Length: 162
Length: 277
Image (cartoon, each protein chain N blue to C red):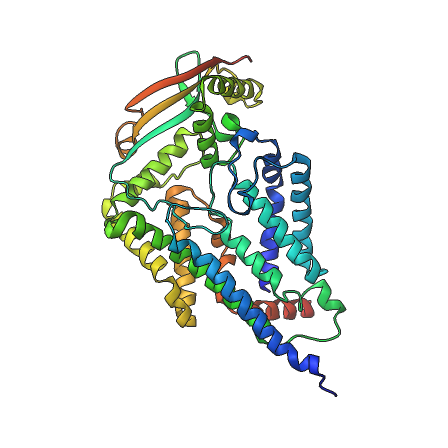
């Protein structure tokens, strides 16, 4: 069997291709390590999840709540609150819409109320209003003693039409 | 075999979540925050175009799994997946659950990943054998995996200093994340409350996770160490799922760590089983 020049070159080509791709990809993946750890992106990431110091268990959260006739309030799931099922993206969306101007916040509240009103789930059948509130929690005490917020301020409220 | 594992994951994961990927076509333009290669965009792309790319990505994942027209289709699938995942991360919140999966798909798409156990291989006239042209991709998949975890460890040290190992931040994060999920109407961990009562446990978790992350590149020096590290990281992700209800599905399925193992043995076992039935 003859051994042609292209066939003899193939192992060298494979070596060079593999080495080049490996070096470039490894360099790209490691590149974020040389910059600001908070300059995150996709798919090249610094993976900064939970990397900042958290000296206290406080949480200030802007949330969407369903209000019931007896005064109870229940958090709305991400899909109902924002149309996005991912909780972190939903949280950011709630913040963006609520603090992006009064008209935008009112429109967002009405959108949520509309989704709640149209929801087939019996859980929300009796909801009379939607509130967007900023709540302050002690998250360790939440599990040890009391799950009520330390404070809560209603930012928007709109009726639900069932 | 790695192509089959990653391909199976891709088809199932991408397919089951099709409604989720497609939903980004309906998001409001004001919420668009492009990242990565999409940073130059001024706004979302045409919804119909985006949805076509999503559907092409799913079709591409099937071709990728089957190893059909691999040389042409695999890079296109990788590019489409790259686009869709970047687009999905461009709405105000970066999710870190799909980075490693995407990088592994890109590597496999650039390698001769369909020379065996594929539709292309059934039509081939020559057979494959152990060769550098396959090995570099496997080694690279291992390297990007350890690099990802190493970067996570570096971020902790850069942002928190070595105080992270005291465990207080970790405990507060576990508490905060669970309360956030509860108060945003999302599934949360039923076990977090049990562990929060024991602060010392979080010091142990913090030390272990930082050691595994910063020590990750060292495991590439020894195959046995790499296997043990893979199992330890998999356990770490099970712990994250248990305590924070955060699912990194790709590592939890162990497919993320498959490159550290001789998956061709699994292929030989499957072939033998198929041949004897």
